[in-house]
Length: 335
Image 1 (cartoon, rainbow, N blue to C red):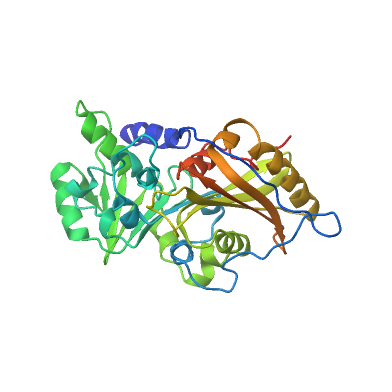
Image 2 (image 1 turned 90 degrees about the vertical axis):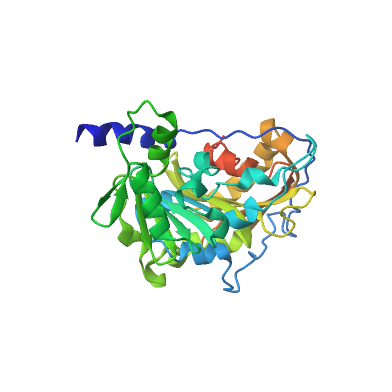
């Protein structure tokens, strides 16, 4: 019990991590007002029901209150193939590596030594808050190989899972690896990694009970379109609950051109939606967002979920994901 308590401390600290990007130039343009002087309404891309990799990933995890609070997704196999930058002025697409899991991200370079092959996966998706979080490394895995390597490294087998050794060790390498892989479970060609209280049944649901079937989460996923990496967060501010999702578009990813960024948010009422449009236009035009993003367009998608959609270019592909992670993205705080 004592060892389990101390293992929980770094897991809780994961929720406080701040991932900062660097600064680049920008310019802005606002969405055109509608003919009636209000905000123009546009249709969300992907609303025709076509399943992107993001939607496929969401269909694997249960629609629970805890899972809806934080959702991370990345096509890690593609991100790992991005070329290394040779100039400070180049767009560094490799910053997207590890964006599918806050747990695994610090250890992505050494995971292959323990049989975990993100480069072979279809995608990596994570949902939930620390201790109850579940990461699914979908496809391309060899659980038997992972089991052998982790048992040799000090993990123990317990009820079909691999349980990490206590973090108090003089070996810093093993300490951080234990934080990244507290619980590991393999099924078929998939691998699950979770916090101490992870429930694998939440990653074995039928599609109709999944996050992809949640009307708000699905609307936001369709609004993002074909994203190579994405982050969803549910927030409450001034008694207003809203969900924000940010994604980096797959089209053009890995090129020398700026990343195409999409940010979508869902609001309880049309009034909140309109207020958010005005606030986000203001927030993207000042401070760090004004330095990182250019060609910003904020529009109201509307519909039953009262969506707001933002598109922008950025030479820092993961900047918007870091801002959502830090709860500091435009739209996540209100004036």
